[in-house]
Image (cartoon, rainbow, N blue to C red; front, side):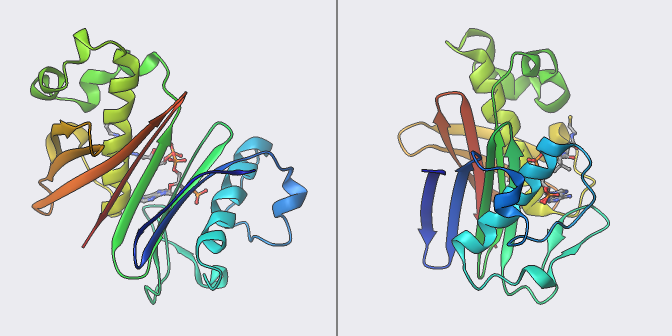
Length: 206
Ligand SMILES: CC(C)(COP(=O)(O)OP(=O)(O)OC[C@H]1O[C@@H](n2cnc3c(N)ncnc32)[C@H](O)[C@@H]1OP(=O)(O)O)[C@@H](O)C(=O)NCCC(=O)NCCS
């Protein structure tokens, strides 16, 4: 079963994660390729992301997708808001009729710890107790993924992860992290799931 995770978030918003087990031939023909991707696995990821859009909403109009200067794909008439992410053999997408959305999927790797001060403030590292957490790689990846989801939700680029995106208050029981995004003064709830070897974060707001 290629659907790895699926959620109806609200009446107008659906999310899906696909474990890519297909070859390119499965997607080609059904799914348009919206940019030149020379690396075969990256092309497969790109096609799987597009595939998910119609998987979630069968009337999703592929033909109308445009790519902004920031590289964000969008529909000019805003019939749907959507966001796509891919990592390894996974593709994730979130689609909403009415709300802005952002999604990110990551495979935790230790390297994230070496670059943590590029995207986290000292305060965030203390709040989330990265240094002493049982699995610091997993925690740092979750925070990176959360900020990527906010970056994509915003969509206009020019975001400084340390200065513009402030994370606090993880509620593990409902799997959320609070966020203040200072570029447009938004208070956001980031939702997340931690699977074996995979982290997923998403934002729905506005
Ligand atoms: C551009 C960026 C979203 C690309 O992500 P990536 O590493 O390729 O990872 P993902 O697979 O999760 O996302 C790719 C998808 O995001 C979407 N995307 C690309 N640019 C986007 C943007 N500006 N806004 C929203 N979505 C965007 C596209 O759908 C793309 O997939 P597609 O081209 O196949 O459709 C992201 O890496 C980035 O630049 N982040 C900001 C990094 C940064 O500023 N860091 C500073 C602190 S260290």
